[in-house]
Length: 421
Ligand SMILES: Cc1cc2nc3c(=O)[nH]c(=O)nc-3n(C[C@H](O)[C@H](O)[C@H](O)COP(=O)(O)OP(=O)(O)OC[C@H]3O[C@@H](n4cnc5c(N)ncnc54)[C@H](O)[C@@H]3O)c2cc1C
Image 1 (cartoon, rainbow, N blue to C red):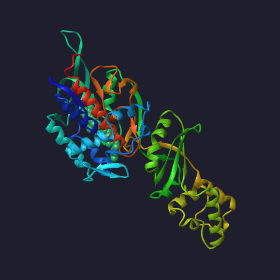
Image 2 (cartoon, rainbow, N blue to C red):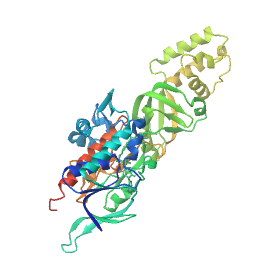
Image 3 (cartoon, rainbow, N blue to C red):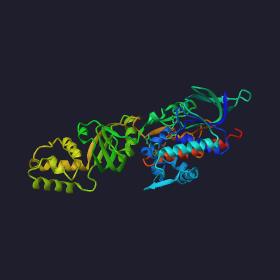
Image 4 (spheres, rainbow, N blue to C red):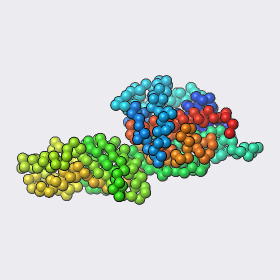
């Protein structure tokens, strides 16, 4: 059995930050990662550019069953501390409307610099090694808990402190397969059911084939089956063959996933003409119908709506694209305008974990001390990152959560190594 003071389970953003902070506090650190490299997911972030934090920080940017849990931690180690630490490491920030990226524009440089820092801090790194179990280590002489025994597919370890930074279930191709939940459950922790977040909404409508590839500015509101507003957002909507995507849809997807997981039938209301009122749209369509008597129904939307979206809209309203516009009844025009302002869509499902950027749900935050990220159930056990029931909105908040929780957990674990239990 090999001995270490702090064992970090999982080498993603949170685990790397925890390992750096624990090393900084003087502890011997071992980080174990099942993939062939550390921080594989970091490479995929921000479309390969790594949006690692955001200058705009508000409590509402972080979500979870306890919505203030993350915010309390952010007060301790937030965006300012992250940017300063990264600068110290040599990662200079580039500000794009508050979204912070590395000046080099490459996620690779963030991952590589953090790796270099780990090596210079003297942390031991094991890759291609999967953690298969962990349990309390009971000192036979004293009969008391004295650290943890950790089992991998290659070896056995004894560690004084254990940090679980094994991610959630989103994007398993990057290593996060939910195995952190099982390890935590073994220590008595409960789980807020993990569901996909920051993902698309899948619809069961024939017209989605028509709109595939269209984009437009609009707003989206998500409702529960009982008509309760779950969330809303606006911005560029992206229409795909399976349903609807784009950042506004990503932002509300966690609520839809949760509602679906509880057996509900959530729906969306989309406004694809947010700058115009229904009456203005009706007038505009009536004018077009009257002025362009030679046009088809599809033609009267030219310059107003993306033609793919217009085709889907007509299908939704049961109207033909090719019929002469002059035959359009005024009631049909009113119906079209009403749908453009308030398009009802029942959601069949959200994108699977394979397509989701983050996990909504995870280890129950009631069981974690927000000041240290230490388990309230098991002394010496810590959590960091997406494995915890915290998910951020799009824009650098999920990585910020990984840096925040990783730093707090690593510092607390590292500095408590030599404190008698
Ligand atoms: C495509 C994509 C783009 C994104 N873009 C952004 C962005 O621009 N900005 C932003 O803020 N967020 C972004 N995110 C979200 C962000 O990347 C994650 O929230 C964050 O990386 C989570 O870090 P983590 O360390 O908690 O978990 P992870 O990065 O998932 O790391 C967990 C690690 O633990 C390892 N592990 C799991 N189980 C075991 C085991 N049994 N044994 C050993 N190792 C194990 C995994 O292999 C993995 O490396 C994006 C996510 C995706 C998928």
